Length: 511
Image 1: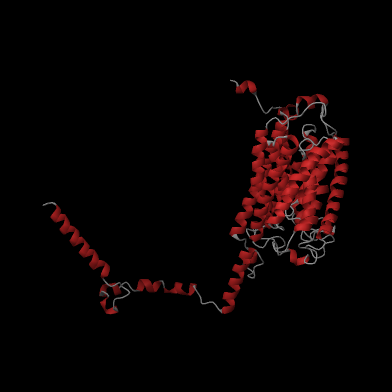
Image 2: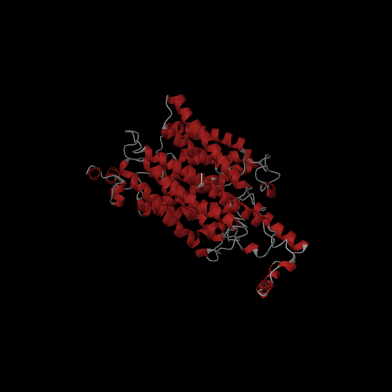
């Protein structure tokens, strides 16, 4: 008790002092005369900082209005009014596009490499991965050399059929936005984003001719294919003065739309893949023995990576972090999920069991078919596309393939060609300006009123270019260096014959 009293007294004294301190008037409330005289002596120090005051000038109503307009332009991804901002990228939009670029590359490496790698036989797993890596390196060099310029340079000698050489060697492609394609994204970032599309497109062809085409022949074929098929087609669809760019080119001869690559990526690669596999011929033993996937585990992992990376592919095609990108993100998810259910459901009905391969195939089909439509359709449109994506490619990969007995090793034609064609057509029926106001720019009279006819025209041009181009290229390569390995090398596996290594060393794994 004797110890408690002093503690209570100490607590009371501390509390009283605290009350006095906190109830004293602040310096802002005290009269000027109350300020201590010595404190006035250092007054020149604040006075020295006075010149900083003009740093915040009073804006006129016109100046304030102009700044608000530029803020609105940044948020809505429209053209800035300020000359300074027109040469400056927006950090938020730029960040999203750099992320999207990485996501699209993630689709090829490692997504597609694992997806295809798991589907082939064990002796060819490395060959497929080498082909994906080879595409990444080869196409990047071609893109730097002239590819980007041929696709996105304007006023070319062939008009809307091919771009110019303005950006050859990426000359002038720096941090300044190219207003023809993006107001707030650095052109160097935009060029790298589009490079990732150029990389994955020829890599998709690998699936149809897997296990039976020499690595040297594949690289030669892809080199010519990029110049004859991809660069012209990409310019026609996405170039600002492109022959089939209905959204932005008022003078387009075919007023079609393709948000993220239904014609440019999936149709071109899928139809070329079919033609090439027919010219190449069937794998040794095809139809006589089963060619089973050596690791559906790898295929499942690759599918997941493709799905994740595809958000950069589709939502990134808005070339901004805006409302159109948000819609593309949503519709990509919905269509893919629906197709991922429909395909295995059809297996369950027709074969008694839903398979992991069915889930994977359905997911990829959903991603493919929604691609041209993703920034143009609403959620209900995405559901419709998802159902079609699960049904039509399923029939192509099961019924059509068995009917005609073509050796499309990994179903590139069934998923990408058939799926991409269906997606391009359905985009013409389901696109709405309520989702994407850009459809009002040059297409207000066609949306929901005959746009599908323009889509059919674009499909026809794509088919003609892909099929004829592939026949010519394959013939040239076949007559020069040859397409196929010897039967002995094919039987041994392309891992060892083309690359001198194998994917699995079981003796080492066993110690």
